[in-house]
Length: 574
Image (cartoon, rainbow, N blue to C red; front, side):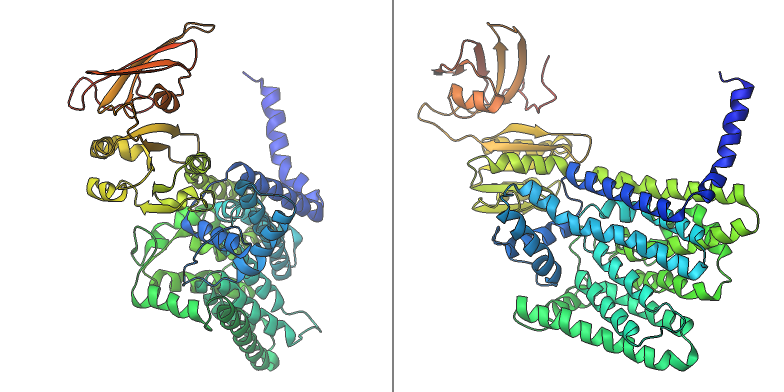
């Protein structure tokens, strides 16, 4: 137990921490923050090569297609400016340097998004500093934003709203009033940036409304009308260039992707997600997931500042519009988060000026930690599925059935395959039976196979056996099944109970169960990785293949033998 003197010393140090931070150079702290976030994002992109949604995979496949690496047909509702004119040239350059591994090409594609996420930190700081006229409050806003799970987590992926957020923040900075520098070009460029943000995701054009509100509040009355016209002209010109001409160049018709998106989302009310509709109040019900509730004190303290009304508009107006759309995702709020951080930073600065240092410090630290806790969502990245895809890329498979093909990267790692059949998670036995006809390999989530034994029976009837299992701390474990084709020596039906007895150095014995397939020791050795002399016996069929000095006896039971029930890796008898 620490002594009373040690406790008093630690308490004094803790209480003096805010003062030490206040005495530090804001510029150095900001640069240190950006460097730390940059290293963290790059580390996440390198170590967690997997996917959270199909959006990432769409972006990458379109970029791989633009670089001439992959045959792919993009979804017609997507504008292709980012994958074709940003990521495509980057991947072509990487290919010229000799980088051919799809894994490292995926990592390289994240670098522009990492850079944009770091620029967003700087933009948040600049915007807050201009509104507050205080570098300390701006620094708090930058910290609140940097460690929030949405920009931190998605900033290490190719999720396009990271780029659109940079455009929105850039537009807000351009319309900030600067004495003696009220140039008309600034609102024109701001409107163009909002149009550019819309190429990443069309819903981002909603930020034009709070941008106009900010212009009406921040600009002097005698310049508002011309500035408003400039903003609208900039948006119209940007829409023509980035939406019209880009679609004409990539889809063959101006605004083709925008029209298809409006039909798919607004008229047909469809969504690519499994759950297409959420309640109107969904974002409010899930407020604690995207807004640390400890920040509400800071936001409340900033409510009376007139110059912060547009910042509140950047939060509330998009929230109202997104709530009216039938499909909702927390990641859609990525453009809202920086303005929430600015409000919080400004409010905490006001509390600090009133002398409430301890309360302010506690609220700031709590808000940063609360926002960072959401990083747990990266645990859903599909690392096991990507590992399975990389393994299958080295196999001789032609037709592959995948449960959620986007989790495996679709064709990013499997470009050589003749066909990939996508099935939903936990498919029905009927759907699985139909999908696996003529397939070589099947990959399913382990939890789905364990929860639905009927899937195992379907695979068993079609002569599929487990050849590998992919697990880890991140992502859903995956089982890969391979169809075992009849060989010249006959076919073993049923499930096999095998025993491996090592006769050389490192003697060991194991027992387990596996699917019988081709009556060949080499086949069973490939399935179970048993480099051995293998004998397979079922009724009157006996075959032998010699591979090494160990002995492996495999006794195959008929399919209807209740003793030999299907077993998965991890369920083997010891």
